[in-house]
Length: 271
Image 1 (cartoon, rainbow, N blue to C red):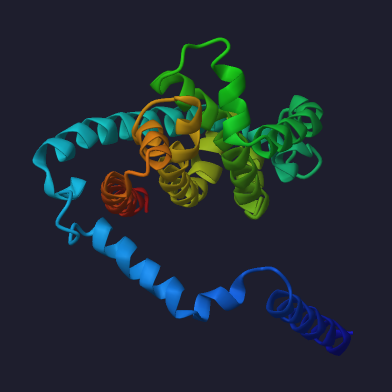
Image 2 (cartoon, rainbow, N blue to C red; image 1 turned 180 degrees about the vertical axis):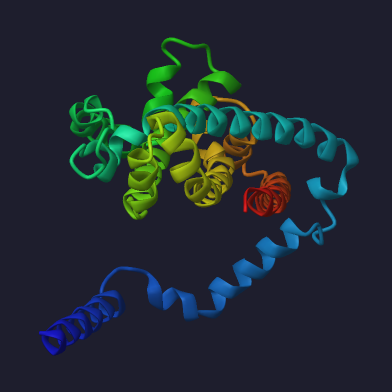
């Protein structure tokens, strides 16, 4: 069976490349000298070597202007991931199969089992709707801006974080919780001492990773004027201001590097 699957993959790869090379994909244009001449001219303009315009990343005023937008983007990402993480922490437990099944942990609240399927369905619905669609709906109720973008990002990431959080708990051993319950601990004590210490470090890893993704996704949210660097990115692309686009991408790189440093620090504190 493995050999048949491998041959099938090789066959699909060969057929795909034959179609690309023989069709109207434009792939052969990549090896033409005219294409690389255009690439060289574009890079000259982007780096400011055309002696016509000063690139945006060499202008201090542009750094200040985009820096303010970067701050808005950071604020939007922090607000959205905070809302998603908080609601996730309040609702993920009934979504874990091993906790919702009261037979596996004697004395665990039975109502968790009733909430399991509706919650898992809600996790699927919230994470399956793209952030842009959610933002287009949200702006009908909230004026375009940082809050609308944060709410749209929070709704989508809530579904993702809740699924990951539930799976963290499902992969845990329930024996420590069962031992705590059999020794007379309340459900709150079993949660505090048997689940949270093992759950929190891995959840913080997922949370900070989604924070990085949220910062990059603000570009998409900017297409519905949700504020931050995303809206400026859309405008600069439409006006062919590629040096301004490069400056915005530099700011995104700075933000992601900063989030990576913060997340590594948080993970060390949680361990």
